[in-house]
Length: 205
Image 1 (cartoon, rainbow, N blue to C red):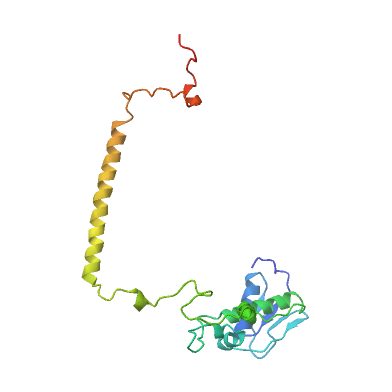
Image 2 (cartoon, one colour):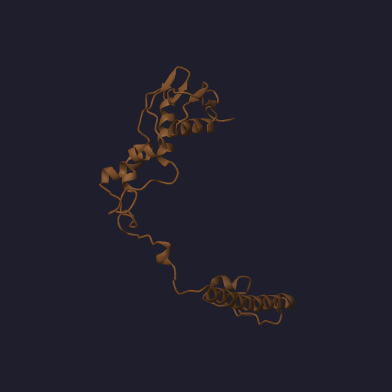
């Protein structure tokens, strides 16, 4: 695979989520990555080893601090869909490998750093700052709307727009068929618009 990391020594990655995410990221950049079975460091390439504690996606999410920001204010923290914390942690592991172990950061913890610095907490259906609120589907629906009423409204709107569009199309075709009119009176030049006098004698003969 072509990419900027084609010259990187072959990489072996562990099979737990964050390490696998790091391997997939490196592979997408052109590195040759394999996933041997058995316990091993998170990533190994040449003489560089990246050592990290294995964890599943749920543990990465809980330890990142982002889980404490998910859910309603009066409720329990909620798990996430997918594994964003494992992907963030994997990106940090890949960065550590590429820098020879000189740059080591907790990628998953970066997801909640801004909230930690600004003192933000989970607000459920209220956005950060309180400028917007989310509605449940049940709250946003019309309980008294029946299928027949909605269908008849759609049919009526469709008929109205079809009639308007048909008359507009017919009017445009008539204008095109008639062509430009040659009997229109010439517009008298306006002395207040200098360009309107272009090509005309300035003095009356």
